[in-house]
Image (cartoon, rainbow, N blue to C red; front, side, top):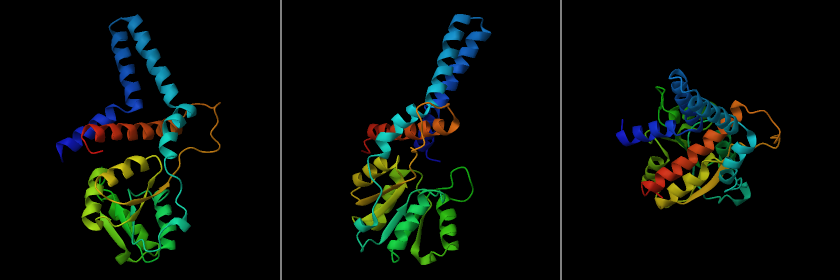
Length: 237
């Protein structure tokens, strides 16, 4: 595995909000076992408060809203009829794939490009998604599989080799769309954003109990900001 890619993955895990909270807790426990009670109280209190905050809906929504509202939902009437490709970043048949299918039904002659490497599994996400698309009736010759790219930057390079400057529909989660568009345009590509999988819900309330769903939302937004910073530092954007 590429050492840079591995380093990026490890670093991103360590810098995640929950990881930071747990690191603070571990430091607090170390001081506790060393009988440094004052320092232990400080670190354990900060850890508890931090994990509570990142699991609270106002905080998670504050982080993810700027990302989700950058691009609006793609209206079919605005989709050029001559568009020939729909790029579906990642799998996720429960969310993103439905948007790709919605657009495909409007552009029945278009091809769907599935993406996603194997990650921790044995079968690449791109292949899994392609098989499901075939099972629900999408002709095999209308599906192109990108199972080698490991991240959005590599996906942009792969797509450029196939499509060049040809416009295409880019389907991904709303919070990931800003970074994806920047990376694709940096490669000279012309994506038409089709954001989906909105995380902020109308039922979200300010007065609520912190829970895992909001924590996950915080981590998704945090991951994007780290990704943007990483791309900036490497001169990718």
